[in-house]
Amino acid sequence: MTGTPRALVTGAAGFIGAHCVRFLAAQGWTVNALDIHPVPADFAALGVKSFCSDLRDAPTMAAAMTGCDVVFHLASVHLEVGASYAKFEAVNVDAVGALVAASAAAGVRRFVHVS
Image (cartoon, rainbow, N blue to C red):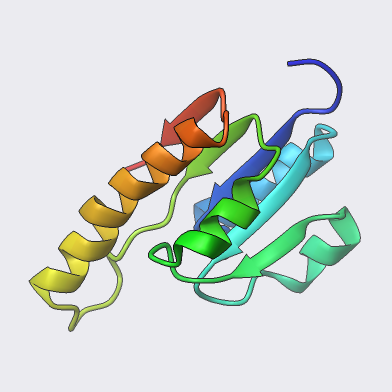
């Protein structure tokens, strides 16, 4: 990578995702944060661009990863007690496959999948 590294962090409002965003920002990375839930308020002061969206929203995912060198994928359906099997599969399998394909198409150099 040349210049300032740029990353997309999915699941950025979660415990691990929020720490990942803060760490990358502290290291001088340009960070895009994506989560279905609102991200922590301190992200704005860190210069983090936030996207509040579902992983299945392809246009938003494409916009969030534009220009990124790395995608740190931490989002999943796992805490939603009543979630159906279909929702687990749609988000944790199908959307991840689409995210990997979109990352490749966008020229993302690294994809880190945390599971």
